[in-house]
Length: 267
Image 1 (tube, one colour):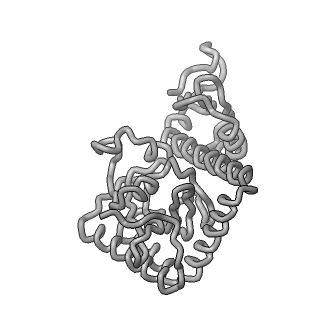
Image 2 (tube, one colour):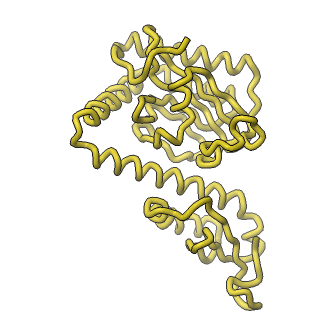
């Protein structure tokens, strides 16, 4: 909330505090430093820094009062970037291992394969249109890695084809294990996802993810859509996404994917 002065006196600009869940690590601090100037310029605030409590933003009181949602989205974006940096550093540090090299080769192969499937772009656009969710992706999900193979993004979510998310932060990793479609709206009100860290971390209020299986029952990944705003999906829309996921799996088989990244379908 804005206060008269960052020092508690009557002079100086108002401040807004954004409390963080934990102490930022160096990945988060580096991402914050890279994104800060753009945020300041876009929202016309004079100062933005990290202190022991979280983020401190200074500027005109009227500007700060309208900043809450933008600042929350900024924190989520910085968190995504820091996770990406952590993942990439981990992949780089393990680049000499035989198993990791094989996984990197397999991921690149699958990304290239999906890129050569013209129907995927049309499917992702239709998924976005039918759900109202403005970010959609086909993700490759193995037991060690989550990789975006194709992306449709009209909200600047910040994820591109070929980029990874930390596997342990994704709901897709759970879908890899149980093999079921996951869909929810307003996670803070959902009996299972109210305390789940993923929606808060990535800043979405609506979500659907459908498993993609190959013809022999092996798990490839997921067809996902998310949005920062809540979206209600009816059963017909959910069923249509499941048909799209099945079509992608069939196309992967026709394109010659003989070794999927995941496990067999769960019965």
